[in-house]
Image (cartoon, rainbow, N blue to C red; front, side):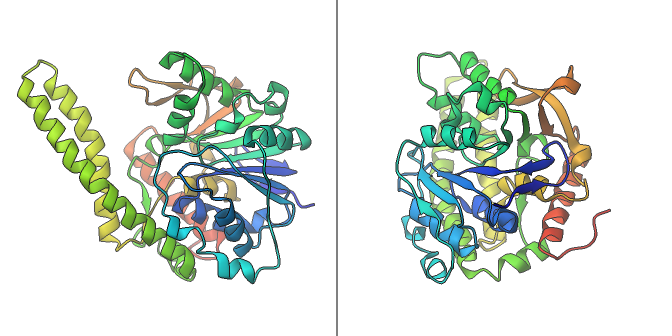
Length: 365
């Protein structure tokens, strides 16, 4: 069997099995396509989740289309109320039918299958691109031999909210942060801490990458369909948000301006996404899971200088906060830019890493 190899950085090593945890949104699919050559022949368990529909068939057809299928099992994980376009679920069917590989859909409880798969590997790698619900309760010894790349943000928020029991917010954060530190090594990625909250991959920022993506008509159709759905979903949310802002100001309470400011921050994020989508005519994906994959494809240590060992924590508002006291002893590292200039550097270098991986772009200096 082939091994999954990470050439540089905090996660450097060779791994005999890969747990891929994914919600199969467009940045996930782009990330998987970019990583596909390194996953061929590697034993894998793919746990799909989020959204209402069963995504196993979609996942197996996508994997087959990208040549990933030998020793790959796919299982449905935890679903959610998030909308997922059902018209995309068979979009890879023609390419899958022409593929020589056949990933296998398995039934059973995703958490138990996850624990069993990780336990069966000598050196497992967990690529966590969705809420890692299935890792809750995995034996400490198994986690202790697992290396993980973790995209946080919404994923970790949903992980905390779904934890069973009567737990306070602080107890939920403690369980999340304990999980991250239980890994042999973990790389923690947040756009807000590295490339900036609104970082996206669009043709003007990643021209060679988009030339490559546009050769995949199926993937381009997925990206545009998802972005159209995002516009439809965000428009009424922005309208309701502005009505709530107006109501906050009518009360005349002393903290009205502070509460309005917090509300506008969320609205601004939605508006920026909408502006980016329309400007690019739908050719845009958030630079989230693709940023994780850039770290895994970085053969020249271009991103290593921005990786710092830390203790995973959070601030008073529940936002991610790495603590760098005693960082040298931590098994967790975070991709981190202390200032705006650093965010631009990480974004630019990560795009170059991706473009180099597909044989485009210019050499990384």
